[in-house]
Every structure is written in C-alpha cells, then in structure tokens.
Length: 412
Image 1 (cartoon, rainbow, N blue to C red):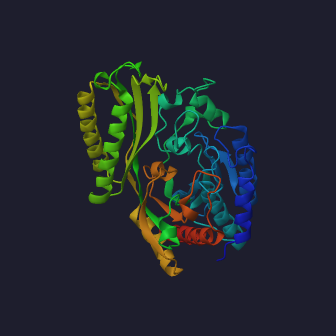
Image 2 (tube, helix red, strand yellow):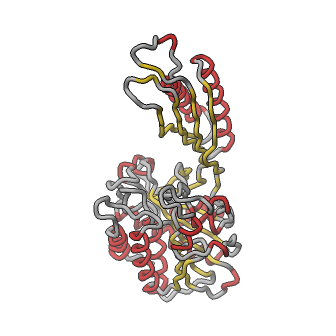
Image 3 (cartoon, rainbow, N blue to C red):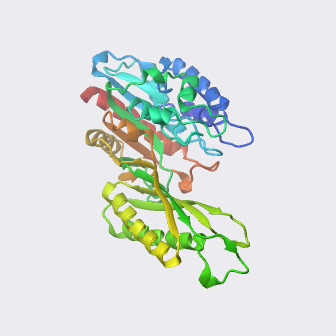
C-alpha cells in the first residue's frame, strides 16, 4: 500500500507557508495565524473524508467512524503550533502523517473496525500562558481549574477563555476513556538517528521534566569601593552553582542507569549593572530523565551544593521552587512491538530510544496505550528555521505508521 509522497510533502510545505511573514516559521497557539493554519487543516481533513470537530479541550479532530465503533478509537496526533521562529516539521509532520494515512485509506476504500481520529492537539508548545500540552492535558484529566485560571501576562485573558476562543468548552472537559491506542510520528529533534544512519527511532518513553527556580539573596554594593573579601555577590555564587550542577549532571549521564540531562537556561540578575555587585540572582534549571529516581537524586545533590555555596559566601537562599513537575512516561510494549515488526518487514534500520523532549503522547499515555515514531532531523536542528527532515526519511516513517495502524486495527 503506497503512500503519496508528493501529496504529503506538498501539504507539509503548504502548512509551513502559513506563518508570520517577518518570523518564519511562526504559528503561535491562540493567534490569528494559528487559526488560519487550522482552517487549512480542516479543509484537508474534510477532503480526506473525515468529519471535523473541535473538542472541549480545543483539539481539532478529524474522525472516520469504524465498522465496530464500540472498539474505541485509534488516534494519530501531534500539533500544528510552533515556537517563535521555529521550523516546518516539529509537530506539523506528525499531523500531516496522520492525514496521509487517512487519505490512503480513503483512496484504497479501506474501512477500519476502530474509529480513526487524526488530532491536532492544542498548544503543545509552551503558550503565552507558560503552559504546554494544553489540548492533551485536557483530554487526560490534567488541565486543572488552577491552570485554567492562569491569566495572560499582558492581556489578562484567562487560559479558560482562550481555550474557549479556539472553539473549546472548558465547562465540559472530560477524561477520555474510549481511546484504544495512540500513535504519534515526530522528528527526533536531535542527531542520534542521523549520526548512526538509522531510518526510524522507536520511542521507549518520554522524559519527566522538573523546572526549578532558585533565588539567591546577597547585598548589592559599589563595584569600586567594596573590597573583594567583604562582598556578598549572588552572581558569583550562582555561577559556582551552575558549574557544580553541570559536573553532577555529567556524572549522572555517564555513570547512572538511565537517560539524564540538566540545564540552567535562565539567569536573572539584579540590579544587573556593570558597576554594581549583584544583590539578587535567580537561576532556572530544566532537569530531564526517563528515571524519576535520578531526577530526585539530582535535586538532593543540587540542594547540597547550594547550601555549601550560600554558607561559604554569606548569601541567603530566598526560595527554591518547582515551577513544573511531570513524571517520566513509558510507551506501550505491544505498540512498540508492532512498530518494530513493521520496521523489520520493510527492512528499515531502527533503534529503541527515549525522548528527551516532552510530547503530547506523554499525556495520552496516561489514558491509553501510546507509542511514538521518530524520524531523523538533519544535523539535529529543531526549533529554528533551519529545521529539516528529508522527504525520503519522512516517507519511511509514514509507511511504518500506516501499516502499524492497520496491524493494531486487526489485533486490538
């Protein structure tokens, strides 16, 4: 059963052209440009014979009812929103891949026993409200009232009102119980597959993510008149913490059993002047692993380092807060076996690997068996205009996706 390579590639490029013209490729969730993209997607879904709707969580769904709807739905989904000045493949490739599967089934006159749903999950990327995976949280029971009350930092529009503006209805949010299996194709966003010259990555699990905010207090002082031995410089203390954290993370990644990375990606310094000793510094750490115990162990080690630095430099630890905290999730073994069988059948080279990035599938795995396919990213580039995946590589991923869909429909 052949997929139409020219069709899905043209669709992928066409959706990429729906972008803020001064910042390609940008289609931020909740924006007019995002809605323009969804209008285009709706038309493509309808052309594929799908019935289109928006659910209570704001997800765009194209559905084809199966011969035995009581079996539930097999869903193929990803996201069409982007980061600012992102790429044309992140999330979008997965939505178009699902659409291509539906189009092939329509052309071949194949009707599944299960319902088939192609889903564009709302706001997988962190939105202006600072929250990611809004649509997949909504159908998995993880979009809380507290999150829905979050105000926009500029307009003060609540997240609830924004979801409703996208066509959702947060008063009717429900945890779905009818999904028989969830599949997602995604670009790797790293360079492992390309470096090892492999066609497919079968994702074993999705990392948990903890984001920590650490606020150090000291004493702002004149840079010229304050002797070095009398300083309580929070920026120097913060630098010491960052270097120590990197060393701990290197040790964990090399010597612990599991995938582990930690990053200090934000430093906020006050008063942030060249001639003033820093009096307050905030660090934001991003900690990721497929093993929860490693995340917890790292935090204990980081706290020990902070305590030593604070005591040595006469500083205070004003706050140590978890901004977000999600647990690692594991992909379903039966679905991974089906993906592996399809790779072997088509003689596509593959490896099993964890995902170091967060995905909607992490939330889908809380309510249904879920699995992911990775396809190679050229030079590992993602979240930038240069993001690219070769057409031939994407084609192999869609073929595996399509035939896994057919296999699951027969055996679930």
